[in-house]
Image (cartoon, one colour):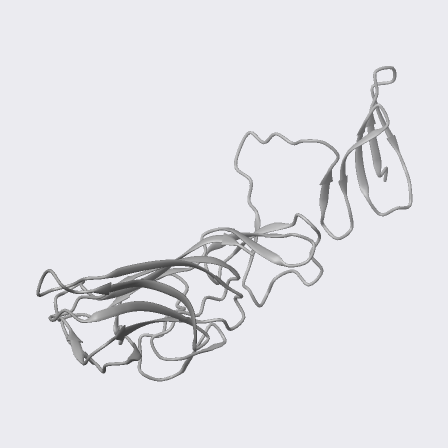
Length: 242
């Protein structure tokens, strides 16, 4: 059976045999498309498809064992498109995002310390990467401490949060990565009203293999958060790959 099919301007369509194990389509003896025995298709130039193109799909644990640079597919573990850059898999779209809040309940905050906010209610969590319980759990094969976000995808994440007090303390919202202070949020001194609602945001890199982040509040004196629905929240969204 011929393994090289060549379209020429002099002899029309010709077929030749070789022993490469590949099926090669040529124009004027120049390779256009090569199909190899590993079921890979290689285009020498650009390709135009009149219909849809189906990409390969896999889980994070089931990624191709020997990927090639530029290989692209859909990761069903977190619902995103990813590409192999020659060294590692990088997410192109659909990275993890979550939002959680302290719903219709209060939380007491001691003065002079950073206190982790007990965000028990999730609004969404696309990768199941936020722990909304008071103890360490395993999510996506990763150990995640209480009220922490530990995404299984490496990249840069936009963090944001807000709290609301019933009093007017001097306070700040802080983001801790792996239990260590990392990115300072807004600090404020409540002076003008009986209710203050500071907000904070930060861009943070998380490695996708165990890095986690939580939101804490520092207050100068003992106070408590208000129980107003939606007043106390923490959320994060994937921005770009590593």
